[in-house]
Image (cartoon, rainbow, N blue to C red; front, side):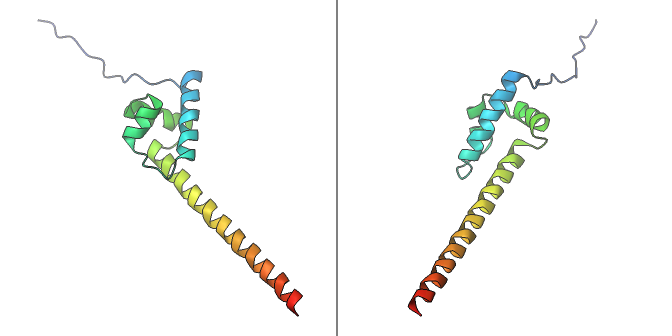
Length: 104
């Protein structure tokens, strides 16, 4: 009796133009909504890719996992907010200095 041999070769998801566009859209969405809950469920639902496909395609497209990308975007968002706050505080300080010179 002859046993059928299954291929253990994993079918790779190609990084073609269609997949790249979907990943660009997903990355833009992640960037816009980075403060929302963004787990596997949201990522797979939004992209239409499976978790395994997302992991593989993100490695090809961004050289990181999808959740690492989400963490990076969130950190950048926090850094940008801190920079904006520092700028606002500096500007307010400059205005106070200008106002104090007018009082003298």
